[in-house]
Image (tube, rainbow, N blue to C red; front, side, top):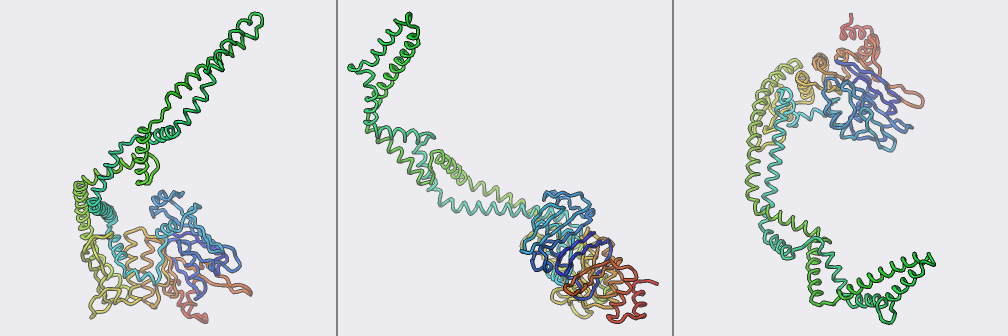
Length: 553
């Protein structure tokens, strides 16, 4: 239920701050006073596209904020799914638009996307205007009405869940079948690729080791010469380097008794001797191990060429990646060789899902068929009170050629308002006024079976007058027993039956025009209804007629 609306700097509205009540409320005002502006602001709040032109002249931004009592709407799952704070009692929506055309949206002070705002908005407000009458032409709308009144929510949820599972199983099966056709053609090539990998017999660190070995073999003479150059000074007969170091160590040790520092120097020189002696052995061993082997060099180069060729072919740069591709190819071949069995399993799964879908679909169809008769009878009774004494109406349900997300049924509403005219599709035969009354009757039936959002009727009374207007107002009163109803109207007969009456008006100053709204007192309401009756001079007769409509003695 809409409890509060606050608007600043929107179109002709400088500031609007108004409380709303439950039950049936009416909103009146002269053409151009700002009723459509308020609806436009609510539209923004419900996620419609923002336009900088909507901002009041000279202002930088506009703001629309509304508070809702949500205790009966069971919206907790929405708030949980979207990670929005919520206390299950009140919800506040806010939309801000700046003069560049950009906007921000908030739910309970949490920034949200327009998609989230729109989704929540559908649970909070239903604005019914003449264009919504086009819903009568839409199959989904009619099925939703029938399912709501039939209490098919749980059954329909089961159907949708099963339908989606069936579609998914079908998609998997079709993908496998398509893949099987391609794979049969590719199987020989896949085996050829695997054979190349098996012949290559790769190991993970092989490439690094081979590349290092190839580099060593290609520079064998240079390496051998460098090792020889480093080894020669240590062992040559001319330099006697190691022998001289050994003699020097002995000399230092011999004087350590008379010259104590010589002991440490001897130890250090001996360490150098040991290190150089070890180094000499290592250099000799390394030198002896370097031999140019053209046969080995040829093998290493061929092996590397095999690796590089595979890497280039598969567009990778390491053996680790090649080994992963090899594993994937093995898995792929296994899948191909077993795909017929997999297809059989998936076909059985799709068949099981379809059988379950048929069962639930039949239950849904049976429930809809039974409910449609009851709904049609109730609508006829309701429409007869709205000036259609000879109305005939029936829901035509037929089976579709295939199941769809809304079921296996196609539905149309057959209608005739005249005694001697056969029923036809409502979209082809009903006038705008007849469809408006039909929509009103449908909402009255729906309100008894489902917690509805605030319903705003925007001049649903177009083309209606007198007694008929009063009967439409009485129907809105019936709806208001179950949910909040706001009706924007030009007819005094409807305005008089509202539990609360709001008047929209504009004030024209020297340099600006502003729109306002106020809740009328009883005296103000009498004058407003009287003015609606006469449209000109306020007479005593008009006042008395207004009091009569308002049931005021």
